[in-house]
Length: 237
Image 1 (spheres, helix red, strand yellow):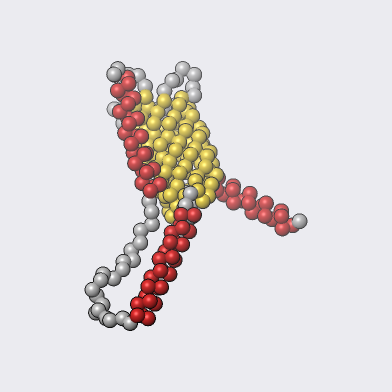
Image 2: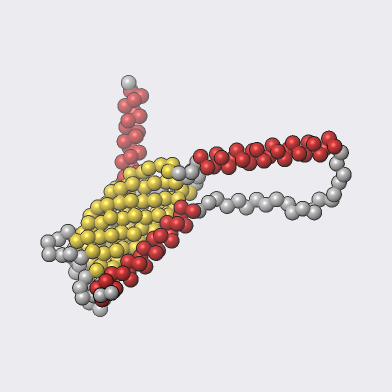
């Protein structure tokens, strides 16, 4: 394997492993019940009559049927519950790891969708975005981005692990990069903070940077306003 391929393979493998691990955990997360049946032997043994035994058998059958019905309802509640629009504006700063210490502001403008899986207070989530990424200051880059993420979204707080692939759009630049970001969110992801590591593949050595961005997702706000306006128009008719 050539030195260039080795430089590309190692960071790409690490980023891909982190994303697959987090996405698998989010997709496979199931509710945990903390209720436990009382262990046998806690109650003193008693001798039941035939009528009591029949009633207990009928009660056990009814409980089993109710449990099977609840399991079926939970299975029906799985899958994609909501599809929310994403229109994210992010502002922050980046700092290079190299001795030169490149630094500059960062800006992302991205659109996409957020998929909420299963009903409940906390939803396993998948995020897909595409858009534009800008690094100013010492970097001076313009990139196109494609992102995919997984995590959990709640009404109050949420957390997402997002992998972003970037491609240079400037003439004369042929650099690509991979960014791994951890997003901490509030209010169904409307506002949040992203902390990320990005590696840019370039000759002769790859460039690493750390960035912090605050973002506002106005996609959900636009969606809610659009629905309210549509409902208002229907009621006026």
